[in-house]
Image (cartoon, rainbow, N blue to C red; front, side, top):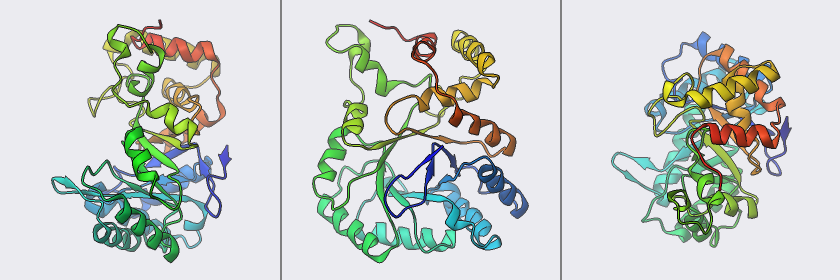
Length: 304
């Protein structure tokens, strides 16, 4: 299940491989890791220059070096903009970051570059100039952001030559911030409080893909909700639905996210080849509406 994400780029699978934890892999482990993804029709790899201090990109770049032609088979994304104690979307920093990223990855281009979290001090005209330079040089084919509000995206997009193609946000069955207030519009309960600026409708309206990170986390790196007794009802419901599809609970948790109608992609964090193969099953499952809402409410959420 792949779609042509944007003209002149590689197809992108709806399940993506997050490379944050591959920094310490041996050559053999890295080769197996990438091969397991491709064998299961996962062609999307998500990197960042801060992962392992750049070491994660070096590990993946080594795989490309040892396997000529492999790079052309995948959609390769990386992120930049996080520095030690601050964020930096200046032209000099982005350009130098991309050059270093390409060197570590042993490639001449990225299919997508994301600005890693918002820089409140960004100059949108400077970002536009930087993106234009990268696009014209062929070093980056498309651009996106991570963890930006609808207002920040609209402000930046106003100045850009090419549209932003994605926003990477934290979303899971147990972390539904971008959904909750949408269901409680114009109500006085606490769930009507908007923590997210209505980012999901904005992205839907503007044809911007949602990339979900930490899809099994219950909070900001607070651990996974799978088999957590605090989420007993959620786990029971996931298991019930998993049994009907003859898969495991994690697959249903991924499928729940993929059901969100925003060209949604799920970035998985596992480095285990078997779990990668298992996660790929989610690309072939479409939950019905009752299953989706049952999972949502079993996590402790209320419907109006």
